[in-house]
Length: 247
Image (tube, rainbow, N blue to C red; front, side, top):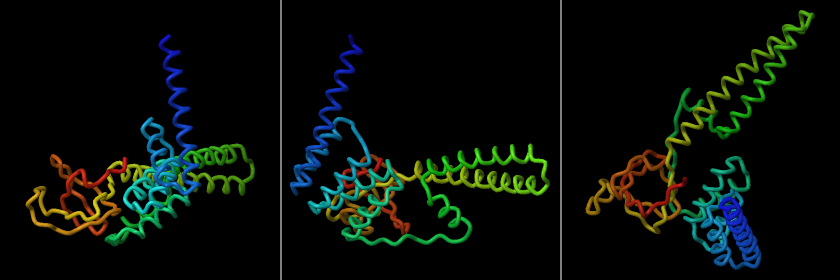
């Protein structure tokens, strides 16, 4: 009986979420962006998540000129679909509307090369690349083992060596990408103007000022304060309710 009730509850929840999602799409097409936002937020309240839902919600907020929630929802969509070119494109448009233009401190040398390589794909994509080349290395090994031709043996051996090398690179990149994603707690500034404090105290002097839509990294927590860092390595403290973490 409990299982039947649970299934019925799931069906009702799914039907409501699907109905609200379609209602939000219809409102967006009519230009009623506030109503679209309300419908999409209703879907989120049912704990239903998808890249398409966050993307549509970001679009609706962008149309309402609400830059912070637009960027936040585009970032949420990218968490679920990191390689979607349309989401990335719309995020860039929204970021251009933000006031702060913080330049990242460039890294150089071998560390930068590894970071760039790992950032080429998401960690799950690197994992799939490793799986594909593991299968390829097996095929090369079989060809090498059963081939009676010397030239073919050499070709299979070189292919097997290249495949193993790609596997090692893919696994290493996946680990770096995964660690970077887990260590980095990113957040979006939701205040129009946000004074960043030198210390986690209300009466502390302002270190600098941020504005709505700026993306920061949360590097420390103390009570209701969050220590944030910008891409140029500038750091300071802000109230936790002034930002919204992307998670």
